[in-house]
Length: 412
Image (tube, helix red, strand yellow):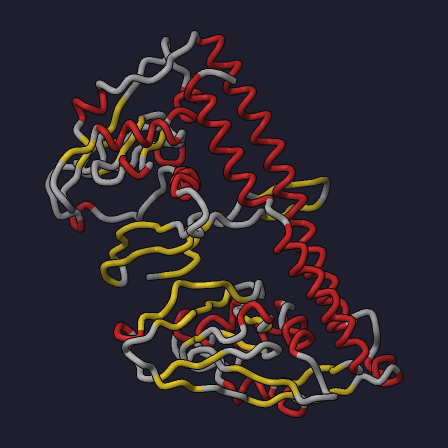
């Protein structure tokens, strides 16, 4: 299973002379049978949320190019030619929202018999309206009803699918609904952009305070900064725990791109393949060895006190009076630091490179006076409060689901 699996790289948005890439579209987990045999994407939601929230999120992934192959590599003799604008569905996963209209980029792609293709009468339904309908939770429920079979063999039946009934207003009304939905979604996207920019502004401030690139080396010395190895201001501090097969252990993972820790499902003792786990302590700094080259660094806040990780997560405690874990995290938010560490990592190939603990402790950095560490800690705490108190993501998904539901019912 792969966490935070990237579906798209993120849309590039140009504002004046500046181009920015929006956040990549990611699934919480990618479930695999083998290393190169993907089974499904999984959206994890809190127990307090509706499962439909995950369905709505998954419908955004749409039809994607799996890979390119030579004809000789195709096992079966028959494949089906797909054209832009076709409606495509997965016999197995249509009941989970795997229905989409093929974009121009997939014109000429080939699919197996597991992915039926449908044309539709544009004199009765416009593509933009149909695209909204198939994303609605109500439509997913209809696909569930059209799916029959025993456990692990449930498939959608084409005759039942074609017999499904959906609201179909006039073409003018369809165009009006599409315009209303696009207007509403555009407002939510703008709000999402503002939210993301606020979080990014916190990150930029943290990086600026941790590095002070506006100062020369001499100016830093005058202000009490010291050029030191990280091993001079913190030390490796592991808290191993012998795994009890009868116990479950609260778990945590680390985002890439210096976005910190996140909660994971508990580790089941009897299923853990090692006899040891490591406990996190509030105030520590940690990272994921395998993904340090892409910024998998984190500060352990109170929320993650007592959670457990594998031996792939070294933990460090700051030396009192020398530094704070918040400063170390802010220092590692800068991408150039990732590149410095990656140049000395061990392994072959980008996905096998690891940054070992000794390498990190040997890393040199300009360390500011403790009052600057305290200031950074205050900014990081403010960022956490903003993220924790802001319910935009949850509310946005609920609003989008409601908007699509209204579009499906033709009541916008």
